[in-house]
Length: 111
Image (cartoon, rainbow, N blue to C red; front, side, top):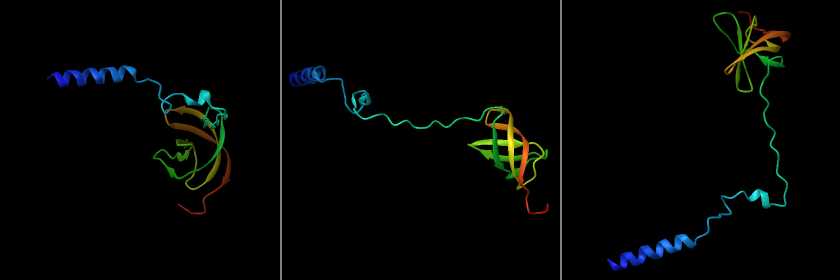
């Protein structure tokens, strides 16, 4: 039992002496002579933005559905397979509701 007490005291003293600063977890960039690399932030879509999408699906209400920057774009009066330039009208969650400004290409397939 005496050995355990001596060992526990040694471990306690060793932990007390050990420094808390760790170069791998500290903010080492503050001490660096090299400049920080700025990563471009992906801008979100705002109301009024104009962008081009390809309609990949049509829902039960006849609205075209596309994807843009990871969001679902719902385009009023769009036909399946067409490529259109749209303007964002409203944004709800991950859905962007848009209106057609210009039709760039129509689909070749008859439905």
